[in-house]
Image 1 (tube, helix red, strand yellow):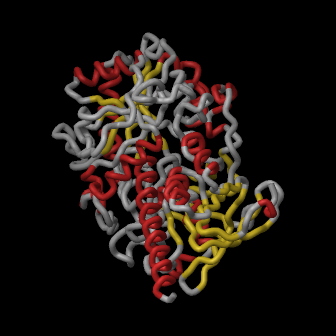
Image 2: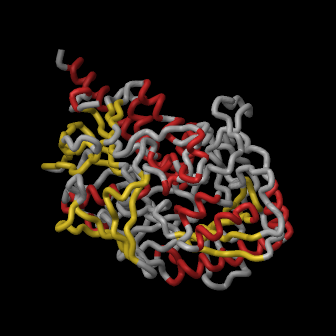
Image 3: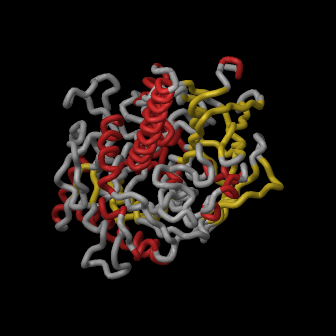
Length: 535
């Protein structure tokens, strides 16, 4: 498809098609706006090939290093890439869709330290949008069991599916240790419940977390939201790389792009621009465009990168825990989320534990050589848990440009630096110890813990806040200093909490979109009133 097939001027241009981009588009399209969505990647084909070992996202063609990130951590240096596809990382996520806890939005000196991280709104202000996001994504879950569950205005839209054999073993073990396991809310269509559509019903395969769903039962935004938005008139341009945002006199004026397949350069204009390319790509584009210089909190752009202090704990069993070959990312444990009397270091908030038994392909992709290849054949004897420890926001964790080096599209090279604090690692170790205890009680004869340092949960690099000097975004995600630029991907978060970020990205984008839609209605009404008054 050529540039000539598209208009060149729109009400809103959205850069990125993941959770944030799709949800804010939902509000703006409903309000009658002409919306163009730009996406670096292409559509992900669905079918039996998604079930193969090569179907795991990190090994697919949709994970690319064409715009490489040079990453430095306390342990190593390496080159990272990113997912480029319609629907963004939602296509390959595991479906876990938890709300942040109510207290996650409150001040917490143990986590904040000297970072000035501050939420400009509270849980009750986001709650209605959590409910709407759950409805749009078709979340299946249960209420009243999670000991940290925040208040809800509505029940979950759907009921969860049956527990797998491995899940039942983990639940029994956790209960025996005095813990309170609960059903993990999942964006999965189990079909036939509460009016659920049986089309694309979950077949309980193990190729879910890290894979595109072969039968479209995982409710990613590419299958759940984007088709209806396109039918309602939104335009989508895949394989389009945004390389620069131009702005003058406090307003963004156009986005410059490169066609990923042909190399053609082009630009598009709009009254408003929404950036939702991800917690690495969004600040990359802002810095490459020099827009941080127009923001009173511009020194924070690209900084305060968080990505949870995660670790996978795999238990090895003398029998096949997943003998029914069923999806078993079904449970979570939050008894230690806000700390626990049995854990003295660190005091205070820790995070969550979730069930996760990766298929062989995911083990090969995530674990370093030779461990991945050695452990993959033994996955049938494993069941696992992942710990998600909230990490502290640090200014030093972030990115900088290397203008002397550029990628194939002309973007300056990006250097990323990230190190966990002593507290981050202590929180993860404490949760790993509890996860080992659960797996042992379930019958594991030994366990293996591996730190996960991918950017799948990356947040915080263009954060919102109350103080314009220490945050780049206001409470509705407007980029300070530029009246018509908004950022709604995971980079908006001032803190990471201890659960998966996807549902909060979705809810926040709906909140920002509703605000913009109300502003549009008010402007149209004002213009109509003015026209009547002058007759």
